[in-house]
Amino acid sequence: MKIFSSLLLLLLINTTVIAQKPSVTIKANKNILILDDEKEGASARMMKMDVAFIAAGTKEKSVLWTISGTKGKDWEFVSGKETDRSIQVKFNRIGTFDVSATVGYVYKDKKGEEQEDEVSEEKEAFITVSNNLDDLQQLYADQSFVKLVKKAEDTKVKPKYANDPTPNIYLAKGYYGMYLKGLKDPQIAEPYEEAISATAAAIEMDQNGLFNVHVHKAWLDQFQKEVSTNSIFINLEDADGYPAFYTGKDVEKKNQMNDEMTTGLEIYSTISKFPFVARWIEASIKYNARDFKTANAIYTEEIPRLMKLENLDKLTESDKKVLKTGLLLSAQTLTVRDKNNTKACEILTKANDWFGEQKDFAQFFEKIYNNCKE
Image (cartoon, rainbow, N blue to C red; front, side):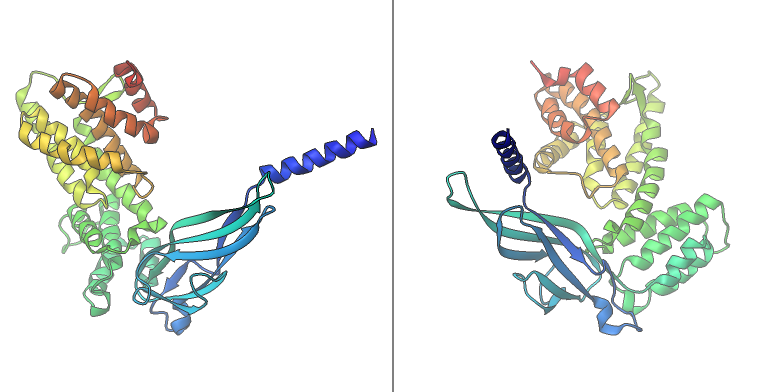
């Protein structure tokens, strides 16, 4: 019995070792840096990062850090280098930065021979670098939207913020807050339209991903939802749980709905970091209006782009809904255009990885296209 117990214990230990895999975790002393913090000075731009490696019976061999942007221009090492476990980095421009750490390790296989492998952790928008605009953030938190608009207008024209989209982001938040609260000001005629213009300006300036910061991305999603609901989705019909165009005999109504959607899509494209999501609905509208040349040109460009798209991680929830709606409409359009389901099934099968668990997509894919099975 003792021998059996010892063998069982050994088996359990070996099983545990085999089941456990090496892993790496990135640790940082802070994630938000302020370029113009007068109190802390240059240290406000610096952060320390370390690699935590769980060996799980292996032996660490190498470390490699990767930081987005350009070394020596956007950021620089204060201490350490790409191949050190611990590094201190100083950042020189606003924006968000992706960070990854890869640890190479060696282990012995079942034959006792040494093998090499690696494990990584990747963190998107892990670091946020911005200017100190706490006064704007406080006005937004206090819901002092009229004051926020005026303060943000004054801030954005200062040379210091010439390349910083943040004042425009808060300007848009102020205008949108005025619209939602029904606040009036004699100098601001249309807060909703001004919010669209300020958001579009911020997105055009945002070359470094500040809209990836959670608080800004969440707000953008809310605003996009307002725009898409009131100008795009309201003009679509529900056909057994999935979106469809108006099929009635009222030609004037049909044209009006198409015109409103087209305008809505144009607006949405200016307030999204990923305007391609709107082109799928646009293509279907164009085809539905018998503008076959424009529709086919869009599909020729967008189908290959979709096939190369790996994930939707950086899209807002509104972006995803616009894209999904466009794909559902386009599948129907492509089936009519081609008189077969080949292209429709190509885009639906690709999108099933992203939307397959959502009820409307799943029902459409299964009931209308039989999951694209022969």
